[in-house]
Length: 206
Image 1 (spheres, rainbow, N blue to C red):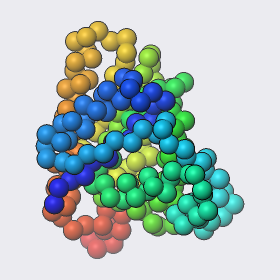
Image 2: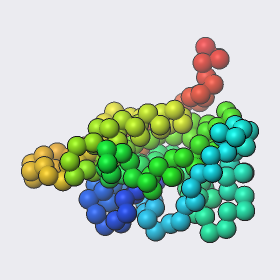
Image 3: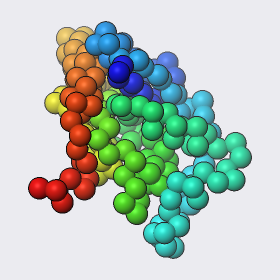
Image 4: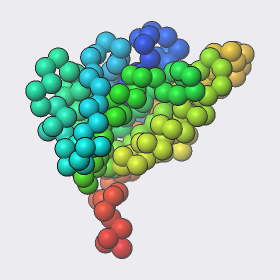
């Protein structure tokens, strides 16, 4: 079965550096035999998380998160996430942190993880980060930590970052890393498909 790779661009610019690096990842995923899809969050409306978990964890679930949300794109994004075998989250660096677009998506995705749901368990995750100055490592680390606790499996070279002030040689290396990530998420997804294992509850069987 063909691997499906979803790329999520969390930049306000659908044609900027972040999009360019993410596109390189997806291009090489296709070369590795995958079917790919790109979402630009700047072109979608996603409501803020209401913080229901703070009131009561039981209130934070997918049904409650999408019910009655007219005009909110999160419900459609959920289907893309569930259908994907691998998801690449791409973000610029804004004040040493991921973009607000990526943050609001991840906060809403709590409804996919909370109360033992772990709907992302066993999916392959990857990260693309582009910054003007420092902070790329901060953003990559933050995103990787969040993804792994949601149940994503991170392959080798699972995070790629680029600083716009780098010289051409260093930027070229970042694009080489992007190609590695693009192929690695496909190969990792293929390996996972060949093994029946619960990546969250499996320890109980050992």
